Image 1 (tube, rainbow, N blue to C red):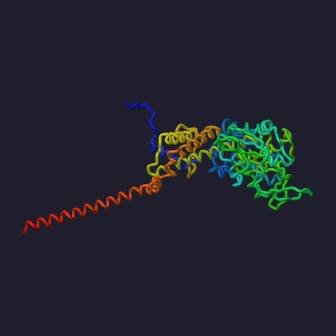
Image 2: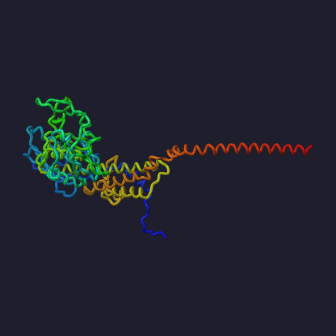
Image 3: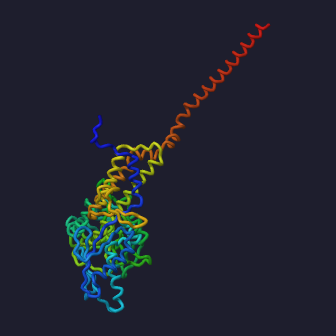
Length: 491
């Protein structure tokens, strides 16, 4: 007799219904903005009204549910704005924004002050809205685990300028440690380093003259093929985790080496970034040993490249940071929310792709492991919104024509659950049993194996035809014989 309390296996039709029900739902984060004003003509009520009208025109489809309050609201998603009368600069510290109203043309700017403050707040809360396509392209795809590979690369240590050792461990701790600590809520990092003594370029840089001294230059086109993958070994371990490379390149035969602009003139920069791959710094002044002091400038560049590759948004031009952190809480919160929304959207898309494949390909094998991963992914998406059921007891923000799931937990927890949902959904989609039929459907098997049976089928068919003809011939002969016998009897 079956135990009524036993957990039943997930029903495929029910799971398909739940996956289809995800269509049209988008994750939104609640944000509480606490406003305090020192300016008499800009009361908290007036500013809240201006902010609310402006924000509702911009944040409706951008994943934020913004609420303004004059009280000190605490908890996840709480920010504070202090409007100061005689201040001219906007400063951020922690989750506080201090912004001034002073302006050279004060009378003309009074009506624009609320809009200017709202625009600054908008760019701080949702910097991805103003992100360019090139900025989005260079960001590495999200992964909970990322490897950082630091390489000291000598073009040819036997040919001249070279560096044989470096204080990389202390440089990472001193110059990158604060950034890695701040990123700990997003990623777990594995760090590796190496020194290579022979890493020739795959092309010959052009010869140039800088201040009467012969040098070599890299054109913008050559930067894209700078990495000589055929001869450089930049990763020493085997792992499925994405790798970000940071290369300190010491030229020898091509020393000094410059980066050229589109007109062929040397630029002041000695570093460049390869989207989703890593960053490279050119070091023309070699030293047998690179101390922590000598590594300060290269690793300061590596830090900026790391922030760009991991998607840390820039502060608005009018805003300065008043803290010592490598990036502010506003930037970190915006990145966490953006990553959580991307993960949730990708997980939803993957689950919908699984459902579409099952309906498209007949006899698609859907094992209990796939069903379990799909069910757990749905549960993780449920946890993202902080509810007990993804379809029951859910807080909805009505905003035609879409319905939004509002994340009631912190954005950090939402990121963790969305990452889990994406991982489970991807594992279900790439299940070996499903992939086998996806890439080798029944029609493909028929096309492959049918010719193999031709050598057997042809003789069989010939034998059947011969037997059939012999049977017909024998039957005809028997009929003729009976007819002959009947004729004799009749005579």
